[in-house]
Image (tube, rainbow, N blue to C red):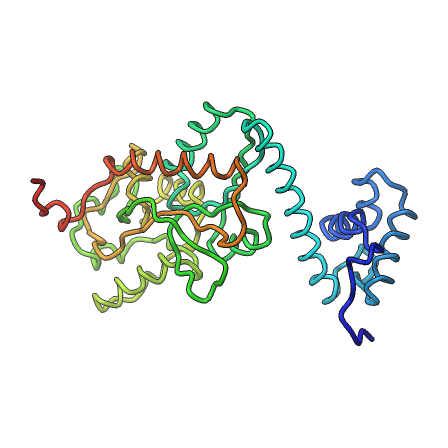
Length: 322
């Protein structure tokens, strides 16, 4: 029974212990972890026992098919990954400060930034600094935030989701982008003008935990309509595009994604209230590495250029230019 806080800075706990525990968790097996680390299995077993003795708790539950983390194990693994991520960032930062040409930046990306902004920004960054490695992880905002907080991701690019109740985060808006109703070119609903005309077709909707799904629900509610019963819920742009091209499905997608794909067509049913604010979500207290700063600089430059390619809202078009 642990009756007082543990002193993990006494020198007994080593970095190799953290690497060992996270590797076991990733591979689900002491044997596979040993093979990955190029160590003998008894050495890994002994190292795990050392960590458990230091902590005074069992980190993994042994079973016939491998090991699974206990409640204590899950908590310790989260911190062990965060420590390793910070050490990797320290190495990247020192290397970046030394020559300004190397390092790694990990970008979490949402649907709104996948098709145009991010590829253009990566291409510009690599042309300027080919030694920087860019890692891209796609997901929903909720799934990407934990990796941003623990240091596994440098920034999240995409639709700016609300961050109230998420301390330690701040956001930089880059541009506003309309959301359009989209189908394949030549879709039979190409001349539809109202939302009820589209309910007879299958739809692709975002997942429940996304802000876009909530906004689309509000659009349907305002018109007194239910959500389409015949639907798929998905945020993978590759899957969405394939379904749109192969079927009569309809989806709500970012304007830039549609305008750069001649096989997709905008349906003339407006979603005026659904306009995305695209930007970057960052950790508030943790400074960016030089590689991440360079990535952010290029995102800002490319976003500024993209402003001229975005369709204006009716309000924007009505503003005087003089």
